Length: 157
Length: 180
Image (cartoon, rainbow over all chains, first blue to last red; front, side, top):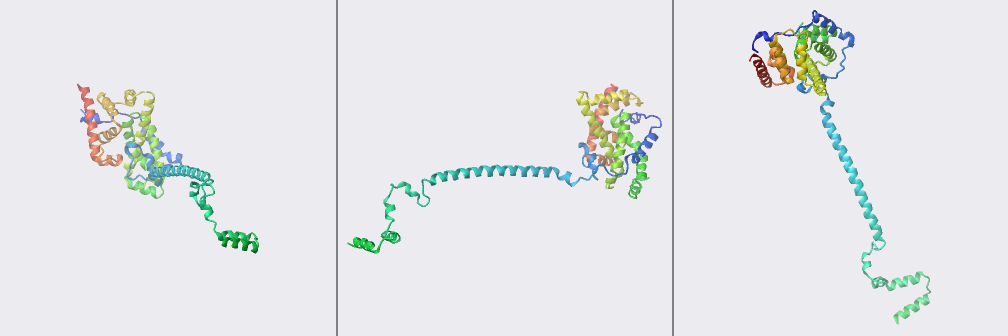
């Protein structure tokens, strides 16, 4: 039945004189629309999912790379936010450590941390003062030579 | 006037003349192409206006890499498909079926003058998925070569042959039901 030529014939009709009228109306489009300047940048305007890629279709640079650019921008944004968060939290921990250092700096001398394991007025501190240190102190403090000589005498005897 | 001549006079600056040649050469052919697809005369008439406005506006972007005929058909086909998409959405929103709406249109169309077999054939075509419907009408009614359909729909010839075969079998089945 489907192969029957009769069934293939156009089964629709149009009002009388329709095509002449249609041609007249369509021919008026340039005058109504103005100069033929493309409102639609390229043939991709006519795309639908079923037949998206026409051979003569021009895909603009922006349309072609839009998904990739968007993806790259999202990635860059995520990296920026991530690095900001990391930087912020790492600064805070550094500050916390610094605060603790300040607290312990009052107790532990930086130059000699082992001192906290020794008694107050330890021998080590006394031992560090030599006779020469005492002499220098006496000289600088204006102690007279006689008194210094006496002290030296006393030391020698 | 041949397609090449139309393109040549357009490039020479005689744009309106070239457009009028397109209207003279293709308006009737495109009308039937769209009409078979959307059924209604009124819808086809509205679509033809839209199609030719788009042809006029996009002529500057036609670079002549494809045949003029292919390019025009592609615009018309896409407009028809977009029209059906919109119709389908409207039908879905009103909880109706597009196929039922199209069948009703065929029944109520004052410009339908076919016999019962043709009515059933038209309804059976409306039941096909859009791509199959396109392939079937272009091949069966318009007797276009697969290569031509391929350049319009940008689908391989093999895929078109398969699509046409499936559509053909479905329609044959529908018509056989009628004759039983």
